[in-house]
Length: 94
Image (cartoon, rainbow, N blue to C red; front, side, top):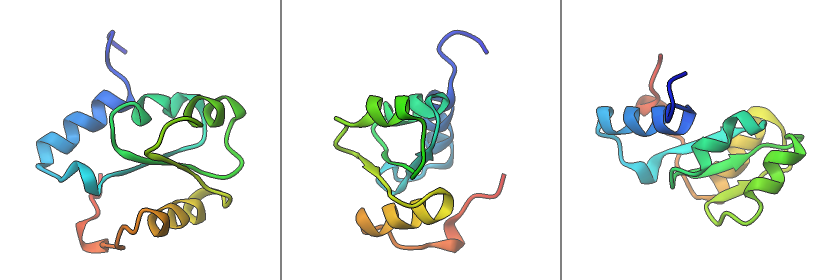
């Protein structure tokens, strides 16, 4: 990828393009490859059983929730923690 392009910058551009409210965005990941998304100021969840490097790198980030459950269950756990409603009609299909 070109310098400065990563999951975080790409997601930020998508949110801007869609005109979405950044406060309604929740990023999720389980590997260090996902770290750039957490640096963009969005709410985030590190799902259960994630790489220890990602857990350590996000441990002091106030907007990141560390879920006990893995995968989609960890995401739902974080949605409840952040009190984000389940808005299936607003999901973006890529």
